[in-house]
Amino acid sequence: MKKILSLIRPKQWIKNTFVFLPMFFGGSLLNSYNIIACIATFLAFSFIASSIYCFNDLIDVEADRRHPVKCMRPVASGAVSIPQAYTIMGLTFLIAISILSITAIILPSYSTHDTHATLFQASNPILRASIIILFYWVLNLAYCAKLKQYAIVDVCVIAFGFVLRILAGGFATEVTVSRWLVLMTFLLTLFLSFAKRRDDVLRMEQTGEAPRKNTIRYNLTFINQAITITAAVTLVCYIMYTVSPEVVSNFHSDYLYLTTVFVLIGLLRYIQIAVVDKKSGDPTKVILKDHFTQLVVLAWGLSFFIIIYL
Image 1 (cartoon, rainbow, N blue to C red):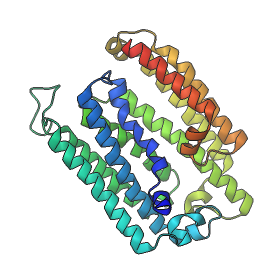
Image 2 (image 1 turned 90 degrees about the horizontal axis):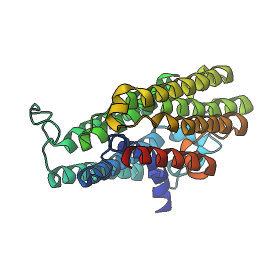
Image 3 (image 1 turned 180 degrees about the horizontal axis):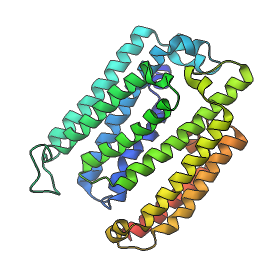
Image 4 (image 1 turned 30 degrees about the vertical axis):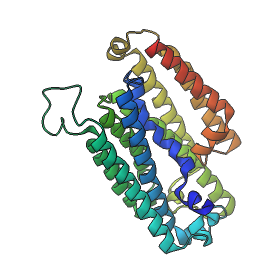
């Protein structure tokens, strides 16, 4: 069981909490219908992601066996056989589809925001979220098989995957996803992806062997500049979001800009982890283990919650 859990990587499910952001930013966090829809979408996305992790380990099994760290992965180490990995991949996919199907049947299949919607727009919101999730699955199969071999394309696909999480959460809860949220999500995850690639470049310089095929198309100068640019644009985008007339009008508050300080501190902290500590290889581990980052995220969330809901 431990090896199976290692294969499906439940710790990585924290990434799928992005599906809750439309509900949070949309001011409907206390709506019970949206909570159920979002939880179902989160679970479906998580099992779909686990299915992709299985496929990724199967595709990379030979390369992982030559890697000093990835050689301990279940398939590469032989703890889980290739047929077993394919079976688990299929099961996690079926679990995701089952969750979406059951939720689509249980929850009301009508639109609560637009009584004049077209047939497609008025269809079950969970079914529309399902289309996004299935597209995410296909895109990431292509990523594992080929797209990750191309520098820049690889990080853009990862960032776009988080945008799809946002869109799925928006469809499931019938909350309109703002262009600001889409832009901030793409930019922030692009920043994190470049920081992750920095660890690969450092390992390549130390060992003389590229951890990924596309690592040779990166170097520290490029990565450092990319991290700086994406962090700066993310911060500017967030500031513009907090002071935009539509957001101020929607939340009936002129104080959202105050939360910018936590975004700035969070970005600086992550750059410190990447550049000074050289430990940005796994953003999930950083979030789960770095208490400073956890406090900043908590402070940002609480301040935003107070401004929106109180």
